[in-house]
Length: 235
Image (tube, rainbow, N blue to C red; front, side, top):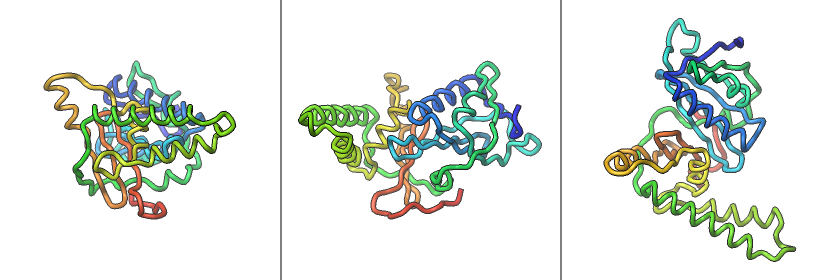
């Protein structure tokens, strides 16, 4: 038990999904921090995988939250690794570790409200196809480099060019789709009527200077291009 207490998640499935998300974040950065915010019967966990320059958001339903529980207004930045270690999937609970000094991105979160759906987002299968084509292009261009040219700087230039491209007729950069796939947010879904329902749950939203790729498993948020330096949003 830590000074910040323990969260009771809605069920063991929520605990397992949260653990998987944290594990993927740590794979990219073993010293990763996450910001936790409790509200509307859920805990939102924000992380920033450095390889993608996006914000990843996983929301987990809580079993017990409100006045008297001690977590109704929780808002804290913690170590992702310590938070993962505190998850007990068998009981669906998670210990909240002590606060850490948050990285700069932790003070620059997307707004909670004001989101509107924007058109032009391809179907999930088309997004996965676009991602596969981008990965194949990166590999082909990397392999085409002469041995003396295959430097980290050269490969980074190729990556930046490819992942900065936008998806279809939207402003969403491909790196956001790549992050969604890598973090388990853009999973291949069921077939038939269930597939139609799952596809409908994937949407592109906008609020102020932010875009958000929302899926049933989590969201990827990114600042819209051409809007300058990040500013702290009310959260």
